[in-house]
Figure 1 (cartoon, rainbow over the protein chains, first blue to last red):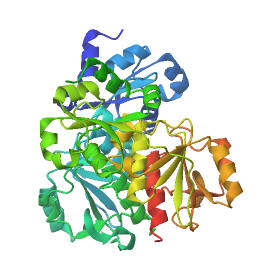
Figure 2: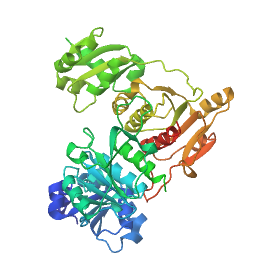
Figure 3: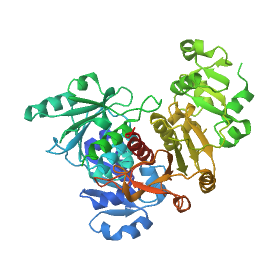
Length: 249
Length: 249
């Protein structure tokens, strides 16, 4: 049986403070849990419907599983509709990271919306980016809405949280680096010659890249506008920049 | 004074049936209403806070305006937070439309999510697209969430609703046309030679382009994947395809 105390524990993981205290996070819904089962995470507990259990039985052998109803799943988790599964998962220790030769790393300068961060992870994963550095005010990578919007890509992307200016100062001491940022009227990304490796900074939804981080940008690029919309959403901008980066490969 | 009956009328416009009956729709929030005031729409009634009124007084001269509180605005409209304005606006008669020479038109094959449709309109507007043809199962252009997500671009994009296969049969009789669709393994859009004008079909969020519409596609393209995410959201795909189209200009 699934005790009241266990229920409270699972529900508490919707909140960052408790995720950090327990070093656990929630993964919800069929698509995300199936991707989780295929990845190398330590699953503390899997709660799922009978249907999900039958469909995935082979993958569940070494996992502690409890079968519960759809309405119980929805009560414990954050999804409005979840007829599949919810997992309690041990966080990874994501330590310091930087771009290898021929690699690009995303730097997220205060991405506040969990849907946007999840979408950025999904796009990064599509374009083969494996690492993101997040400012301390960027929404928590393990927020259930981030996990959900990433559509499984959270399993393949490493995130490191740091004060961006300190991070850049530190890596710049190790080797000369290129830091690319998107601004409203700089070099047209269609004609921009991307370096072989480096960092791409994506700014806050309302304010763009902060003045503090702008000082470190070595190349400013612009997504050209052909019509009249005032701006593009940060997820859209990420996709367009990465598509322009990768078309040279 | 703003009567109970007027309140009911405004609230009813949240629902498609009443929007169609009255041929009116809602525009909410500062950004959207400011864009509306700059465009050529007939505004039946503008409800706004005193602050919004003072900031925009010059633009409001020929409009019927009532000043109400933030909490009243939020009660009447769909936004969780609206400290600015809500307008009741007459729908435009968006009749039949097709691509001119050197123009591209988007065809939306069952886009169900209002946030996605609004985002597509915003992206289309950024890339200079002026017309979209929507399948009859595509979410209503005048849905308040579509209007809101379009960030003002609803003022610059014309939409025409039609059964897609009939629409394509009809325009194909007028002149030979190119109909481009995005699929999972076709020609790499990075190497695709876009024709000078035509139609770009975007498929449903879950099922992509329907079999019925696929029959009419003359060119199949693919956004190349460099990592492991299974798919891209339809708004992201729209942006990447349009960026590839426009880079030739």
